[in-house]
Length: 456
View (spheres, helix red, strand yellow):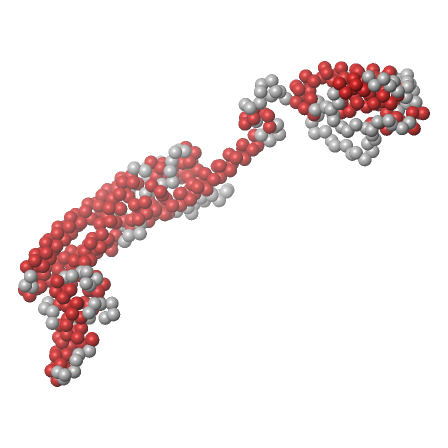
């Protein structure tokens, strides 16, 4: 009672079929509360016995409904009018999805290739030459696995399809109508179509009863036109249902299903098998593609292992042709200059070897050792022109040449593969080495004359 309008509004709305005053749910509630003849009689007797006592809210509601002529036929006719659109939609949309799903599946090239690949694998494993297989076998493709890597047959099938047909799709995203049809019970849909036809016939009978007590010709004509339209649409809906089901049976024959078992296959079961298989195929395809991308990236990394950055394709085009030579060739080009420097150093050492003696070990160095870095020839020439011909100047000149040879650009020196690092614990400074004299091994390594004895 709380969700319904006032009592006098309810009576007027029912007489005029005013759907704005009472909703579809309200009409269904009123149908469950229609008073019986016994209740109507008791209310009238109580009202006659106590004319001064007003009726309660429930009694007023029931008495108001009882005063409406042909109440139950009116309510049933009105409820059918309000529910017809939803009932028709529940039947028509699944039929349209089934028709569209069969068209999508028949034109899907990837689904054909999957079936062909499965058939080829089955013929190879069974050493047979079968022309097809049962559609129910698609449910078992995930369960069949190989004995080595324990990969499913669907995994191998997906791998073959992706390799042979890179442009193939995941199937599942291309057959949404089949997925929607898998959620519909088509047997219940057939029953709902029969119930809709029965309710339409009952509405014609209710209209005849209402017309006997209805004085408004406009309302009568309106309901008559509505029922005529419903009758025509239900007849068309039955024809569509029959043709779609027949087309489904023909589609099963197109897929290679034996004609003897076509009638036994249910629409919902078929759509469910196809939908679940396509979903499993999409998931497996994503895993296969991810695995292939990882393998390709690994192969790309192994291609550049052990190579320099200038030898890769990414940097080979950016390096000029004359500078793109290997370190060995660069070292070979720098050899003439190094040989000349080596000869100058050797001559300088030979000329100054006689002037070095044990007494010079205690001499104080007049200049600080220059930090490691490049020493230009101009600096060395300025040092020679100082006017001092002391032994320290000769020593500094030797040191400068040694520093220059040590601090040359590493790219100008020949590269030696994997040179072992030497400890710096026992390394002596350059000036200390020159002060203490050169050992016989160093003299021989430098190619000096061995006339000076064990030390120079």
